[in-house]
Image 1 (cartoon, rainbow, N blue to C red):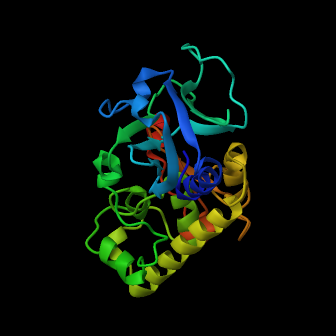
Image 2: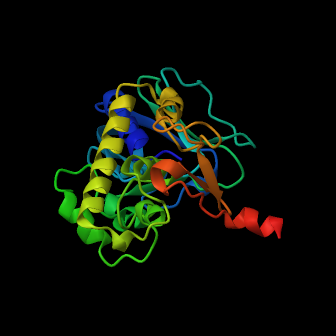
Length: 287
């Protein structure tokens, strides 16, 4: 799933390639991708893109005097930029193509979604705040006013584990499964540690890891073409998706805990005092 760094890089890429250009066609291929119907998708046509914004993991194209085009790429969605789009209209079918946006130059982008869980979402709204997911977002962790005190206030009284709290978009916007693993590894904290139990020193460590991990990921992604961002994300991850590999910090074996629809990775030596975390799904299978 694209998270804050990749969506920020997409925002920068699209700002460079879309701003000042006119949308001549917005063509849905999978009707299920459209989550709003008023204004219609056709209200974007003939409008110039004036700016591109990021709200957590949401991308929003602002048009001159018209509606916003907002998308959330979900788990398996992606944006593919094309300097020259095919001349004919896209054909509905069983492929991954969900929606196409064409500019007056002949360039544009496709939104695609792999797999069977169709969660890619597109909204056409007069204000981004009309999108429920944006309205619920917590503060952006890279905002200038997101300081250590802000993080401490957010976590105060939290009874959830750190892993779940960091992924909650209504608490902190933009962090998902991959970067929560990376942040906790950098902070040397167990994903199972209770979020509301942090000492001031631990809060300081977590804040530094949060800001540094995300800032460095954004810098790695900056200037990279949209089609290469997925590979760049994977190459920069130290523990997430690297089960069985050696921790680059201490050399211990990176371990995994599996859930029904996701998994987390961590280093026992760096994060849990050398003790493996219980994998409840595996434990049930062994009984």
